[in-house]
Image (tube, rainbow, N blue to C red; front, side, top):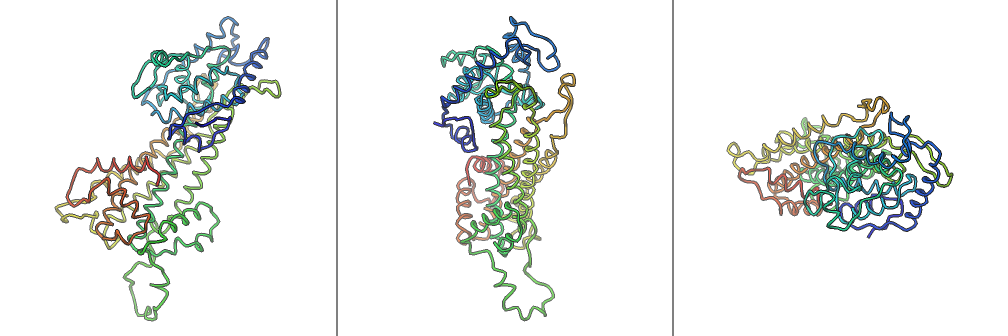
Length: 511
């Protein structure tokens, strides 16, 4: 059980979304929510409060009669439940629900505590609203996607429950749940905000950190199986640059390789006993490795620093009031503005997909290094363990890795700068944050495919070189895990099932 106190961290998201921990709202939080609701209900009498007694968006100039205020909220929810396209997977929707629950629990939205209580029960019972990918422009937040969540809370729409897509009313009946009664501004409070893009974004950061760990392991393993010199990972070299990410990556790779018997010391091979080097015109061994092996700390360092920054911004967002208007109990006032705008999240998602694409590019180049005997000088073409000419080795899957990497490069064009005015130009500068988050999700999934293909090739290379007992213990662990999933490929076989198995393994398991 995770008790929610009004402030969430990545750790709580992981426990609730990935490990299915139940949640419980602290009584002090419910008290704040109730005080906020009572205050707004009283304060809004004889005042013009947006979305309470006015229309929405460019129709805010229209006064709503007291007798129609509740109907206004239902109209908003139903009219904006207009999403289309692919259905967002359960995990990401659950993260969005958790993000929305948290921001509403801060007491800045004036909702009735029924909203908090029902959302808590839906999360605990794993009743997931059906939400489509297309619809939100991320300006008044995720209006369309969040409308599908709100639709479920009023007992309408559809949900996924126990592996089936069902009508909400039927699931509520089976589970003894009651829809929320709209009392004030519950419709607008549920729709106004960045919770879908933020929830998706937080899951994206968790998967990106997992991906980065696997990329570090693959990079370290390639360095050792080709017997690279280890000074490009040295403390001294990397400490001479100030970037924290670079230093951390180099440290992680040194830790990975600390018990390897394959990596070489430059002083042993090039610095000592080289008195006759003046007579050598061409060195047989490479003096330095290609950048995809030698510059890993410099390439992955910015990835780590960016990931940490993205995570920090998203956690700030999920613990913020992203609604309009904002209720302030302490000041006994209501403030109108634009906290629902998603530019913070949109920009961070664009940053994240760029660095994830760079990881897929690194993995693809490392893969190419292993597959090309003219580059590595120790492996057969395409790491072919069969008969050269008759068999193809890893040739076919390289095409998949290359095309998938190319797709990532195309998808990495920023969404943040693609604002299109809409809503009668009321929303004249929008974030496209949910689009950014969803495209980033796809880029991450693509990157796992490329890394899976690289990993299979590393295992094949270890088999060919027969260095299973010379690699580091961490590489040996990775080798053993992947060998339980795939055979040694000495004959040509249909490869896609194995690529998908390895991809599923690295997506669903920490390194």
